[in-house]
Structures are given as structure tokens and as C-alpha cells.
Length: 329
Image (cartoon, rainbow, N blue to C red; front, side, top):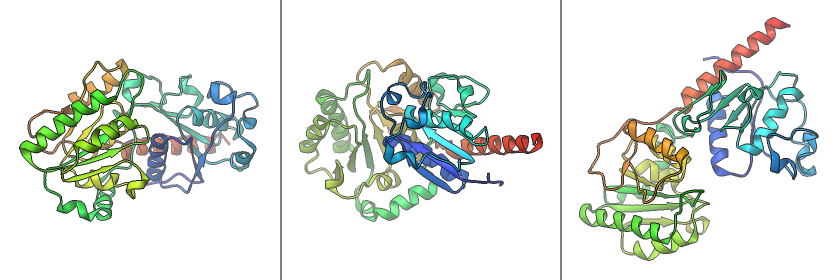
């Protein structure tokens, strides 16, 4: 397998979801890489990636030295802020940097060399790659490492049910009523089947969900992890040991990673979903990857593992562009 030469810059903001996608793709490309966490100032932050005029002044002084020559051979960005810098790199490098933008940049995708946008975004273009879900690092080796990091989960009663709690987003309200209803479904099934509940929050999880779950889980085997005060994040271990995963409907990233594991994935929806996220849910259901929370016992399912395939397509595009550039010279 040929590997592109040169350095790869991974450009993101502070969003954990954006970082996971961009870093997962970079790891698959197997190039020397550098992660740049860049936060543009106003007005560029308001208008990214549309406003490029004076773009090198978009960064605070403390970050400008990071975004400077020599320019990389490849740049991978994820999210709207990163799209400003991946867009700028194309002219700054005189076209020598292959720019890859993950997620719909809300501009002509032709401004980048490769754009990766999930199918439910509806983005079209000759340089657009359209996975079903989001890119992520979950594969057999990653899950094995997760089990090794949390051997204590092996002693929990089965079925071990991992519960991944996201947060409110536009059109999806994860409030106290939602938390009580979700907990009710989980606890009823646990009473009927036995097993354990391993409940994990994310950075976006509202406090009301945590405080609703906390008293209801007392006496139930498992754990409630709400942040660093509860110790290291056991997320890889929960995915590695889970017999079943229950995921709130809001997060494309969490649903994609859960569907990469290979165990049944369930969700609880108590109100109409926004159109875009509804399209994603429907695609997962049609592929047999996502089920209602009260679905009967399910066998292991097909794994949604797209990152290696997308990386292979990106690698081929980079190498083809490099070959054309060499011939043109």
C-alpha cells in the first residue's frame, strides 16, 4: 500500500467530535502528522469559511506561528472553523497541499481537493465522498484495547448494556421528561433480563439528565460516569465489553461509533426528529444497524466501519494528484 509523502496537518477546533473524525482519518493515512487546534478570532469566526480576506490575521498572535510555512503535503480539517484554514492552504501552497475537509463546508466543495460529508447532508460533487456515518477510530484493535483498559467490566452481570447520553441540539430536547422515560425503559428491561447498565455522559449532556439518572441507578450493577471526577473516561471499555448499546438520538458521531462495534444498537425517540438527523436514522434502520429501545433480543449485527475505506479513497486521490503535478512539471 502506497503512502503519500510529506507531512499531514490535522486542523480542528476544540470540539471532541471534530477532533475524533479528523484524527481517525489521519491515522489511517499513515503519514507523519501534526494536530493544530486553531480558533479564529472575530469576524473570521463568525463568517468561516467564507471570509478569507486577511485570513492569516484570523488567528490570535499565540497561534500564528503554527499556521506558517513550510506548508504540509496534506491538510485534514473538520468543522466550520477548520474549513477556513483548509480553504486558505490551497492558494497559500500554490496547490501543493491536498486539502481534505470533513463535514459540509456550506460552500462550493470545489474550493477543496476532497470533501467528506455524510449522506444525510445531501452534498453532491465530483470530489465529494459520502459515508453513511461519521469517521471514527473504532475497529477490532481499538475495542480490544478498550477491554484491556477496563478488565473489571468482565465481571459485571450480562447483558452489559452501554448507555451513551448526548445532549440537546436544535430540534431534539433531552430534558428531565426524556431522561425519566429513557431510564424507565432501561430499568424495566434490566429487571426482566438482569444484567448491568454502564451509563456514560458526554460534554454536551445537560445536568438535568445526570441528576435524573443518578438516583434511579442506585443498586443497579454497572456505573454512571459523568466526567473526570469519576475517574478516567471508560468509553472505549464500555464499547469493548458491551453486549448491547443504547444511544440518545442526537449525536451522529456516537451513533456511528456504536454501530461500528458489532453489538445491537438501540435508541429512544420520543418526538419527531429534525429532517437531516431523521434521514440518518432511517439509513441506519434500513441497513439493520439501529433499532427501537424495546426491540426484542437481537443477534450481533453488521459493523459500520467506513473510515479505512474512506481513507483508501482519499489516499488514491492524493497520489493521483501528486502524479499529475509531477507530470505537469
